[in-house]
Image 1 (cartoon, rainbow over the protein chains, first blue to last red):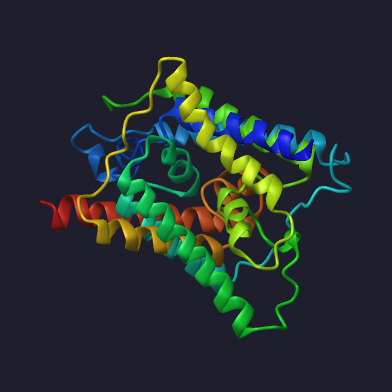
Image 2: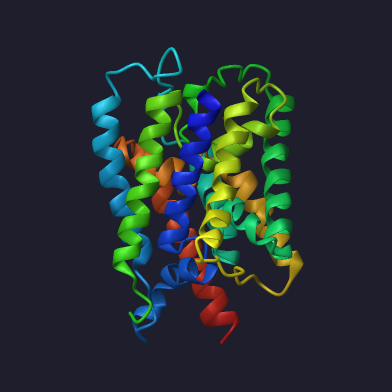
Length: 154
Length: 141
């Protein structure tokens, strides 16, 4: 049942990406190209996606936060609070990659459905990047055993 | 702003939010795609099933749209596979190092008013905007 619920959530999430157009790299790049403001090509749609997503998530999270999840003993709410170097460096690296192609992890995975060779290469590289990080981490510091699910943000 | 599509953006965004709320309500998890996918590649992960199920759902959505007659067009990708691979590596490594991406930080984190997520979102947005400005208007011009 938890897997079925998770599948349903994935379908809803993916539908949101499809309907909003965020699976299209041109749409995302049209937002990131803020200099397009001067010649009228800038596309602020991504802001609307975020605001709508934030309103629903903000209200929904506030309502369910005191409750126990249906299929889990407790909600794994993130607990980290400090703005540290890995957070900022990771975000910067991610942003550079995002700007180069216009794909972030969600749309990249959803776009696998199109069987685009470029997307397949992107997702394989992304998986290698993720695995490389975890490998480096588990090698470098065994003391960082605090890697509880709640220590991550998303 | 000829390409601005506020209505579909609002509907899509609301669905993304709904999925995030439902995932927490059902499984107690944050709907961060990089975290969900990244967990698959970590040898210490022992909860792969729900992760795979969520990812299967993500891929199923465009297929369902195609069945309903709204096929998702092939995404436009850079001509160079090297650029694509480098970008993929940066997105994969960066989202794991920074503990989240557009969904985990940009939606779920900011919705919790997490200062970490707000900082991360500002940084990756600005970094991406700088890269696009450089590639579109400086190098590409």
